Every structure is written in C-alpha cells, then in structure tokens.
Length: 91
Image (cartoon, rainbow, N blue to C red; front, side, top):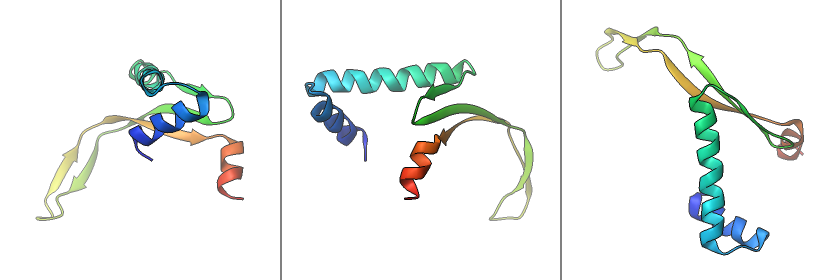
C-alpha cells in the first residue's frame, strides 16, 4: 500500500473527502517524525510503538575492494508492533 492508497482507504472508511484524509495522514506522519526527531517514542494503543534507535559507528568493508571503511553512527526509526497486531499477522 502506498500513500495514495492509504489516503483513499482513510477517506472511504472515515467518510472524509480525499483532501481531508490527505491532511489527516500528513498530520500523523508529521507528528511521528517530529517526535522521533526529538528522541521521543510514539505509542499507538493496539497498533504498536515507533522508537528511535541509535546505532554506533562501526567498521565495515567496501564490497568491491574489500577495503575497510568507517560507517558513521546513525539514528533510526524502528517499529515494534503491539501483541494484537502480531496475533493478526500470525493467525
């Protein structure tokens, strides 16, 4: 499912116009992104939790030459699904 399909789904199931649904989806993404940028997690009850994970700098290898390279530290956004979502996926 891409963004357009998600907006269509939200519009249909919430009884909204597509422009309203687009604003709602954009607001949700913006809120999650802003919280993650601040280092906060976002928990959606019954769905899951978005958390920021810090990965330290590490050594890697250039696959073409085999030469060692330094991979910089990074912050990643990870998603941990709620038990209800896991149960639906594994049913």
